[in-house]
Length: 198
Image (cartoon, rainbow, N blue to C red):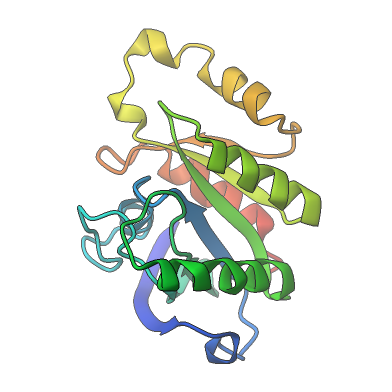
């Protein structure tokens, strides 16, 4: 996958701020410390396009990135606020739920959700999010992050274990990913392209 351009477009804190041009969208969701920004940067061959912070919960709005690729295609990557123990004001965190739920359930341009789950830890929030996405029929791709932190013996059978724990059907891709080594980049792009109509 050749990335021609990748640029930050806007941060949205209300539905009326979402783009109206109907380009296809792929959303990225996960725990607030799972490495969404690092994965997006790795996937796009960029260093600092999505801002990486050591403080969980840095993303406090829905962030849009416009991507142009070869073969010819334009789409949005949409970075959703992380869930979990983000150290932000309760009033801000309370707004995330309705904003994210409205986005995921109503955006007709949304083709799927890349759900990031840390390879070493599957949290109760991860399980809840998987069940929610299944219940609303939203296609998902599981990206197991920080796979470079696992020992080889820990990786044996890991995909089968994750699929079993999350009760995922076989048509849901599970991609092992490392933002450090970029392992899984081609596989994740392949899974994303399979979700797009163009």
